[in-house]
Structure formats: structure tokens, C-alpha cells
Length: 89
Image 1 (spheres, rainbow, N blue to C red):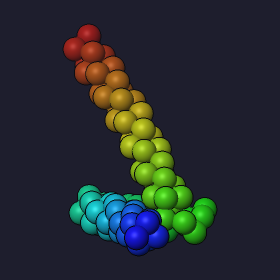
Image 2: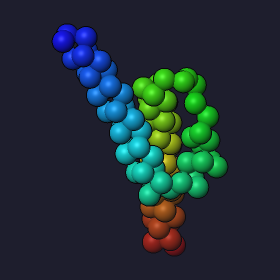
Image 3: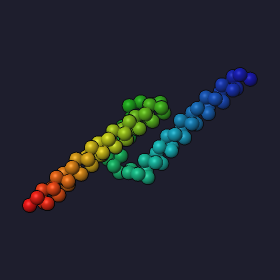
Image 4: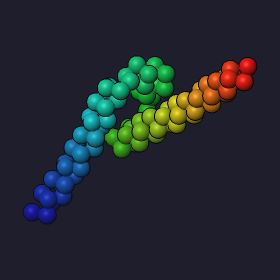
């Protein structure tokens, strides 16, 4: 009886990890598949276990988001600077 419970728990854990990967993939497909595939090479995994692939994917997306945030801030500062210079002239 105890072995069956443990086997069911393990199967449930695998399905949760698989469901997380499916949900992550659907989310990524919606937001920017081309960017993720061709610019940051999301399909290049460092491991074989689902949790490692999930962590690798999430860290790659997080790094991409931080980079985009920094670029956006720089662009906004540049726009503010040029608008201030235009007002002074």
C-alpha cells in the first residue's frame, strides 16, 4: 500500500513538472517566439531533467527582460536629453 502511494506521488510530481513546462512553453509562444528562439537561443538547454530545463529557461527569460529594461531606460534618458536640448535652443 505504501509503495503504491509513493509511486502515485512520484507520477504526480512528474506531471506537475511537465505541466509547468507546457504552461511555460505556451506563455513563451504567445509573447515572443521569434525573439526567444532566434535572439536568445532558448532551445539551448544545459541539462536533461525537467527542473533544470525549466530553471534554465526562466533564467534566460529573466536575463532578457532585465536587458530590455536597461535598454528602455537608456532610450528614455536619451529622449529626455534631446527634448531638453530642443527646448533650450
